[in-house]
Image 1 (cartoon, rainbow, N blue to C red):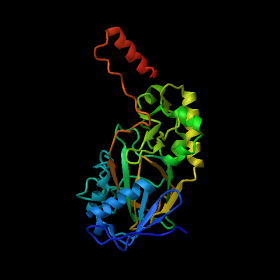
Image 2 (cartoon, helix red, strand yellow):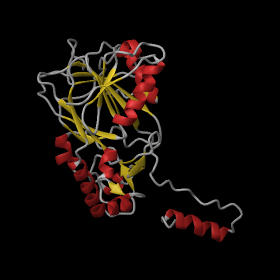
Image 3 (spheres, one colour):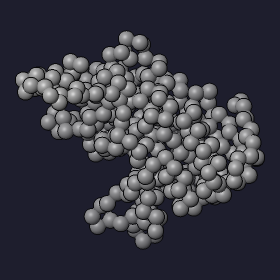
Image 4 (cartoon, rainbow, N blue to C red):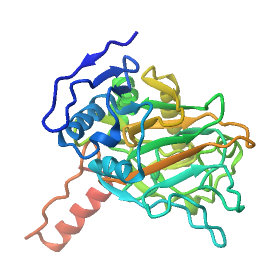
Length: 333
């Protein structure tokens, strides 16, 4: 059984009844003894939560009473909230009126025939959200409003632990590689991942380049940052070589013991580092309804473990400057 770590009072709101309970030896922590709505604007609690996120990656708070404004404010302590509600011509989901940054994830339909939000009941593969963006989502928060019985589980894996578990020679080999993350409709759904045909090579080459190994700026931990599609391309590799390497990386994710699963009940709140942890979920019958409030925030362009610094070519002759630039583009640095 996980131990309970009591905390003393913080400046501001009385946090003397608050406790942190690790959810697994590797990943996740439950914060209990406090209502998030009461402490959402308390500097002491926010500082504690930020430290807990850096250490545990996933924070769970059960049995919360939480309004959309407080939820957005808490998430915004890690970055700028993003409006990620899907726009479909002729379809206007309900979402949460007056709160542009709260996306409702649901497979349900309201009495007026309009969707309650975006989403379906399909099972999902391991992924990080929005990796094809220049500045991907950094932190995600869920607040459960309605769920089937039994509740489907959401799973998390610590990608820093996955990286640490790789053989040293493999860590050395991938340290400077970059992968192209491209857009593929419904790519995180299990059945689409299994049977969806590859896009043409030219389309996959348009994907956003991100380092295969990122450096977490707050903790300095290196971690794997993988495209969800295994037919994505690794810069400098053939299709076959890219697929083999990505298969190997995702197999390491599947084998990693630093995992956590939670079945979110109504009024449960979870917030996690979307860069550091991949997540997936179980599916549920399409006849059952699940409703989640979802807030995403952005933060930073992915930082490589080994950043590449270009040479200062000021004062060089033209031929030397061109040769230097060519060598750097070829990776000879």
